[in-house]
Image (cartoon, rainbow, N blue to C red):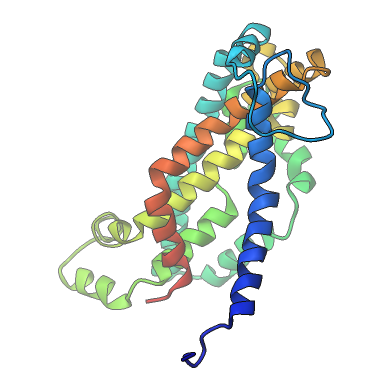
Amino acid sequence: MKKIGEPSTGEKVLRYVLLLFVLLITVGPFLWQLSTSLKGAGEDIYTRTPSFIPHEPTLNNYSQVAEAIPVWRYIGNSLLVAVLTVGGNILFATLAGYAIARLRFRGRKIVLGLFLATLILPGEVTIISQYVTVRDLGLADTLIGVALPGMVAALNVLLMFNAFRSLPQEIDEAAVMDGATVPQRLLRVSLPAVRGTLAVVAIFSFIQAWDDFLWPLIVLTSPEKYTLTVGLQYLSGTFTQDQRLIAAGTMIAFIPIAVLFSALQRYFFKGVEEGGVKG
């Protein structure tokens, strides 16, 4: 007997069909790139009938990428930029989000409105002013200059604001009664309760810094300081006809993101719940 509210068989089939379609258009390109990166030189990757399983699997394409460009240097540069960006966002977004959510000061709503307003502006609008600022600070053609504008993202500040705001006000009031100062309330009371949101901020910041192409291309002029995304453009230009090497370079750029998300996925989904459910 069918329960009230239970979807019919046709509805279930439609849902699974839609899920499979979404899976195909999201995961399909990644699987195709992975398959292409593992195909040998004797395989035709332009056949009318595509094959996801390589007939002659090889890792030679990855070694050729390392021979064509200093990929390890570029990975190190990207990791440095990503670490600075993640650390800056965790520190400054936490402080700003806590101040707006839990402290009372004149102009608090105006500050919150300014953060919201920055989300409307596309990054290209402010990129010239950012470059002029970085140049005047003497940080042009440096990895610190690449990381500096992304070390405080308005979205991450709002994520931390929402996480701190969802905590019961009685917790702070009890801490104040016990004589806790503002830093003590932040570090010992509020921060342990929003670790999931911190993981979300870390993942978003890392992906933004690791995948960014336009800003490092503008700031950096010395080839030895290129990040991985900028360095891979030389791979594309040199081996335009060999899509295997380009696919291998794409996989090299993807691996750190997959590792980070795998390590923090438990906290990531907890952080999504913290941001979506108000206590």
